[in-house]
Length: 306
Image (tube, rainbow, N blue to C red; front, side):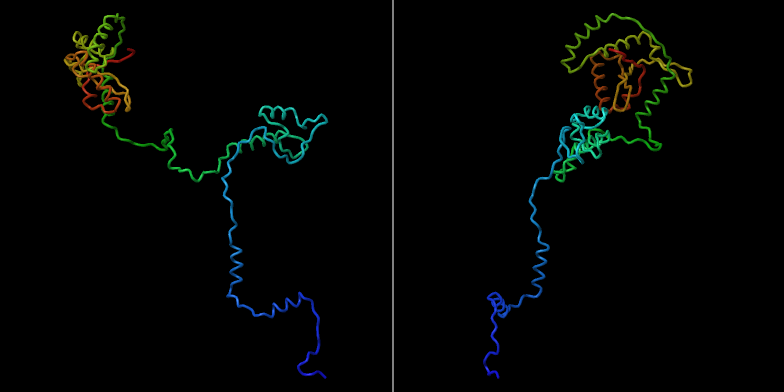
């Protein structure tokens, strides 16, 4: 019979099992609710540190850059790459080494060369990704080429006042008799006069060309032949011989070819004509010729080559 207070059986165990048993039998600390789950979530969502590195820039490959072949290149007994003469010629024209061509069959074909050339071209013109997002598109300079919009349907636009005057003048010119005359004139004396006038004109800030001289010469001729400075009435019953010599001169302007006139040339000096001609040319270049400058002409002078 067993005595009260004495052990019934003695068991011998190893030191590791005993240590584990003693650790498990110790007091346990209560963990906060969900602590293990939070720890697992932290590990799951913790970002992996990324090393900053500059964005890659597309490098331009050279024609002689070695490429990784898809299969070993087949060679002849002499050591040459197996292909046709036309393929060799194509490779020479593009400065390509046949040993750099990726091949899939037992020899290099023309298609392999063309594919390799296309890949080089695509890699060459592939835009670099670095700093692309930092470029301000609004700061880019405007294109020098102005965009042209072509008409897709007919439009009706109003006629401006200058166009109305030009149409009226062109229609009136159809009623003016036309004739031609040619002659040779010795211009030495006229050139000497121009050289003397240039000295006086420079003091007044006036430029004297041959044109003011020719306009004044035309006005002097009109005094002798007033019928050339005349107009016919609408009813064609009368001819008006104009005493004023309002001589028109064609000028190129932003609005097209316009024909302003110099009023009362018969009473103006050569320097006055040159000054008025300069004023009209300045207004024509600025597109600011007024109705008074474009109307009232009685005679037109055509400048051919002076």
